[in-house]
Length: 164
Image (cartoon, rainbow, N blue to C red; front, side, top):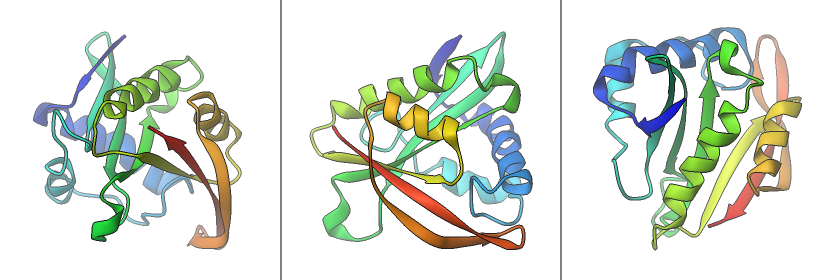
């Protein structure tokens, strides 16, 4: 397995992975699949250095997942905090790829002087994501109850933080 910065040629595969979560899971609260054009703006928010990164895992020439760090909230005082996310192809889950990929992302942004904390939200229930976050040094700091409505029901989101 290789972990590297995402390149524009990865975008279609990243979209495929993410849209599967959008359409089939409560993991993300997006409700409709994205088009390639709509996802380009998201992709362009990332850089190969600095606090806002997009890394991919690749096996046998195929992207198996991605991890990202983005602005936590769109207010000036949050500039030293990032929100992290990880999405894996279902066939890549349970193989240790997530821990290696997420760990690499955290290691890369940890060296950024302007970043103080990382935050991750986990739609509940999701034992695998909770274990991943805790295994990568996050601690749970709270739960937003019934915060998202998808698939005809409300979902809670647990929030995790990690000092960088």
